[in-house]
Amino acid sequence: MPDILVSSRSFGQVSAIGQEILEGAGLSVRRVSSEDRPLDAEKLERIVGKAKPDVLLAGAEPVPRAVLAAAPKLRMVQKHGVGVDNIDLGAATELGIAVGNAPGTNNRAVADLTIGFMLNLLRSIVPAAVSTKAGGWERFIGHELGEATVGVIGTGRIGREVIQRLKGFGSSILAYDAYPDASYADAQGFQYVSLEELLSVSDVITLHVPLMDETRNLIGRSELERMKPSAVLVNIARGELIDEAALAEWLSGRRIAGAAIDVFATEPPQASPLLKLENVIATPHIGAYTHEAMDAMSRSCAETILGVLSGGRPANVLNPEVLSRGDRT
Image 1 (spheres, helix red, strand yellow):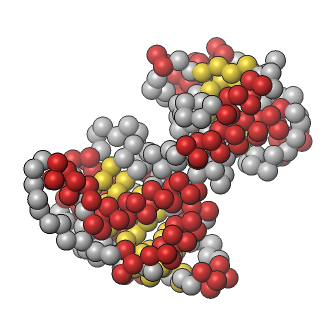
Image 2 (tube, helix red, strand yellow):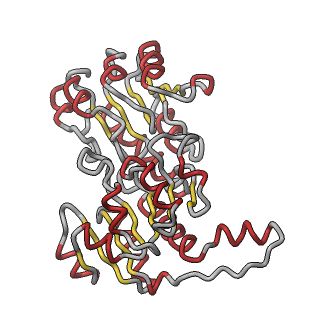
């Protein structure tokens, strides 16, 4: 009986459908115990080496080569999520281990939260609520999203969902992408510009790019320097896209107006300087956390695992060449 080790903290917690599918197919599903958390690479390597699973169902914890090599019969790593920057894809391919993700399952959830962040920043909803509950009656003056120029960095699945929502508000939309889609921009009525121009003219800037070498610290000191003092920044993608120390410096000096951050370079981010700033909305990586998204993600993970174990070639396996080699079948 194939054995699934679940290291993802959230799989099976919000939605039971994925675990039900796996167990209904006769697979053994085991979870990393709460006593072993938080997970780091060394701890996960030890756990995987002891459990010797056929499949590792992973979350945000690091899955480097040492973890992949720890279980000789490991056939697959399935990410309970979309981004696989925490998984050594090259090593997995070399070792003959398939790597899958769950694309398209959380697009709407993340886009919804992005718009919520924009409205919160522009209308000071969080500080107004805190003030009123504390007995205050201060009138917070804000800005309308429909009158703002919004710069969308990254026009993949989630960036496009954000653009669709912004159109409903009537916002002026600019976008930057390393691989612009001119026909899509024409159809949706927005304009691709350089990153420098987007940063210079946008009232709201939102990040929707994957973490890669090319995007690490995409927003650093020189980029922050280009932004308007009245601008606000939203990051719901990956913490490492932003130089957090530089952003904290700009925000504390009111060199930009505010930021909403759902993701941090280190999570949980107890030491992040951003947490101490009044003009920062900070949330605990909840972009994908809706019941609908968790159902879709859980189901996608389970179906992908079953597809690989049954000899199929699911479209969301990122290194499908290993499925033809049969190294660990």
